[in-house]
Amino acid sequence: MSIPSPKPACLEPALPWTGRNPVSPGWFEMRCPRVPRDARPVYDEDMDCVIGYHRRFATVASTYDLTGGVVTLDACADEDARTPASLLVAGALWQPRVRGITRLGAEGEGLAAPATTLARLRGRFIALARQPLHFTSTALADMREPDRFVPLHILRLAIRYGARLAVVADAARLAAQITRRGVPTALELTLRPRDHTVLCMRTWPIAG
Image 1 (cartoon, one colour):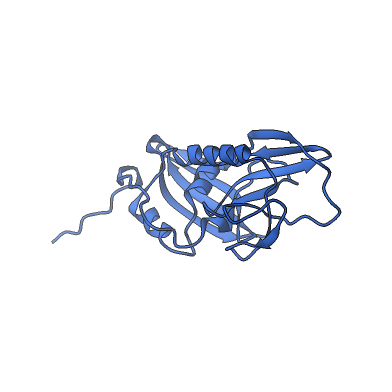
Image 2 (cartoon, one colour; image 1 turned 90 degrees about the vertical axis):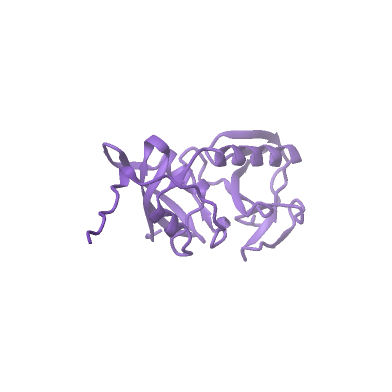
């Protein structure tokens, strides 16, 4: 009895991600080149994701989406003298400038921004999530493993802004730097561009 040979990657079916996240998507961050280095991540506790960035300089507050696009520019008072928390937090239980511990276990400070700003950030995040992305059965199995899982929005950002290492007939290999629980991490993935299918991916910690 002959054993059928495995399908080439170019012929593997494109499968959607329908599983539950094995770890919190809020552990992950990918800062694209257009986001200023001193902008603080905005973590939405209701959505359990970093959905944007916020930067205050002098009397101007700038809010950015995950792609570095400016969402709002607002006038604001100068920062007070205390050291700001590194993580800004939005959500039903958070008040502006009030500090606390997020469900991720990190110290955060309530986002002091108009409700319209948060609504726009969430809208941009949802728009990013609508972009198609599929997986081969092997990549889908990796997504179910806590040590290998990468959230969909991080994969989409890596595909858009990552460095292209190689391109062959029906696949592109990309690399991007992300963080996982604050640890600098390399992400490498192989994509089938014609139908936005991830063929394989891997991550490993790197020196900060």
